[in-house]
View (cartoon, helix red, strand yellow):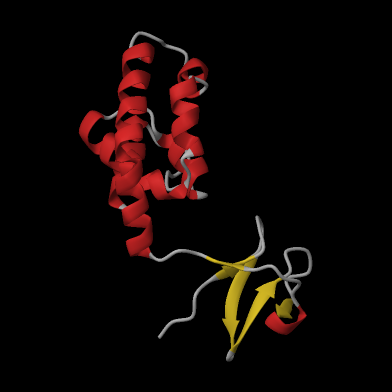
Length: 141
């Protein structure tokens, strides 16, 4: 059975190093073995837990997404769109709401790339992509 990923916080990368869990020091790229790490450590939830959490957040997400679409429909400024309170509330839902944003991107389009980048911690869009290419990049990942 695979071991759970453990983390102390932002910037911490953990890897299986032989049979011991270790963290890679971001400054030196040297392994720091599990026994040397300061606690507390947290276990990342598995996929079924994240799906259940996303389902639980769906009603709130749907209301916020509809409000964002309605209130930013005629705005041309991307800054105004991504700084809208409903959009920011969706970002605050965190990683477990990423599937909801991807579903929204697929069904209603919209500029969800900023939210996806911050919620997932990844940027799936190649540099220089247009909106259609960015949408495809996120939906294909």
